[in-house]
Amino acid sequence: MEMEMTETEDVMVEIPDNQLINSNNTDVIGEWVGCIRGKETTRDYKRQCHIQKVPPLLLESEKGRRNREYYKPAVVSLGPYHYKQTRLAEAEEYKLITLEEYRLSTGETISSLYDKVSEVVHDARKCYIEGSTDAYNDEEFNLMMLRDGCFYFGALGFANVARDIFLLENQIPFVVLEVLLKLKFPDDKGEDILNGFFNYLNYGEVVIRDEKVLGNKQPLHLLELYRSYFISLSASLALGLPKTSIMGRRRSKDKDAAEDYNYIKRNRSFASVTELKAKGIFLKCAHDESKNEGIKFDSRFCYGELVLVRRVVSPNTKAIYLNMIAYEMCPLNPNDFRISTYLRVMKSLVIQRDDVKELRNNGILIHSLGRDEDVVKMYDEIEAPAVNLYMFHQLRRKIETHCNSMYKTWVAELITVYFSSPWKTVALLVATAILFTSFLQTYFTIRPFPDDSNENIVKLLRQCIHFKPPPTPA
Image (cartoon, rainbow, N blue to C red):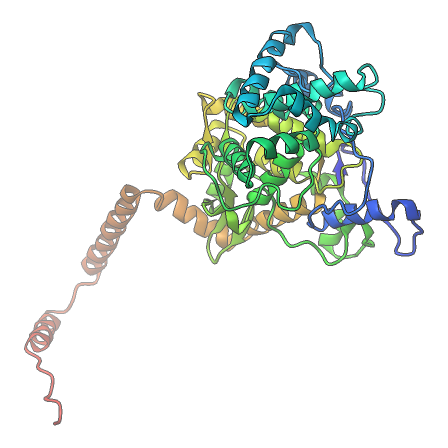
């Protein structure tokens, strides 16, 4: 993993093989190492995990100060962290409406709904930071969970509040949502509802895909569940991980290994989309997200291919991305910084509006921000302080190796300059034909055929015309 530091710092973290580890932390470290290697978080053990607040590190930088509004609810507060704020008071009345709509759709009474939520309210209270719910007794907290949980299902169809339900500090424990989800949508139909909603956020289409949203997962809240679904549908970097963790590797004398320990070299960005195209690296959309190809680079014989999964960028995308990054930055969340790494890659690829145009033309990016410049601005303002070093470094190294090949660069220049359109290809062929005929004319002007050779050439041509192949034997 890496953190943003000054350019003069050179960082290496090494864990000796014989280092003693506290037995109480063995499970946590084991899960963390598993995440580094690309494994799913299992949660087979009980660890104290809370719905965190946004880490101060993300708010102290210049971009962080400008992005503060994207971590705070704009319409409705959910949970105790922003409860009873005056500017969000109007939404409290709408919560009563969604509660009544939910009651009518299930045929339950308010009292029975209250009792069902109260069965998990003790576990829900423990999901928040210690002391953050002390101001509410069990009855008040249970009513809060009931109203806010029902609001979730009423808010799924409203774009203006979709942003608020994915804020890190605006989450409801999933144990509450799960009770209400199963009550309203029996026979696992609730998972289809989440599947369609998540696919709307990812692709702009309300479709039900084959991928499971829940499966055996026990998410802490909806944001964690969406992040898990996001990276499972090819948002990851499809690169093989090393057999041994990069954190426990010793220094090596070869060039590649030495570069792993050089912060400036390993942290540099690679070229943008248009720059890569000039080097003969072309984009390809991974239409079948179920293959889990993710961000994948292949260096072919004379060109390169960068495979990217299709994504939608909407007015809510920036807030959702920032809050998923904030989730990854929170303590006690073993993960591989997959979203942060994905966004660091996109920040490298998207520098100017022509980059966005290329992504649109290849069906990789669909946006509703109005102008391509707004997409560039969005990626520029997103800050990802920590990334998965191995994933990002390996992708950049593969691309740079391809670009440093002189032969492939020449072929790429030939293709991009002279064969980028049919008209340029025709013009090249016509120019080549004119040049060749001009050369022949000049040559035969300087060195004409002898007079007797013309007769020989004519005879030879006549023989070729009247030539008949011998009959084949029976």
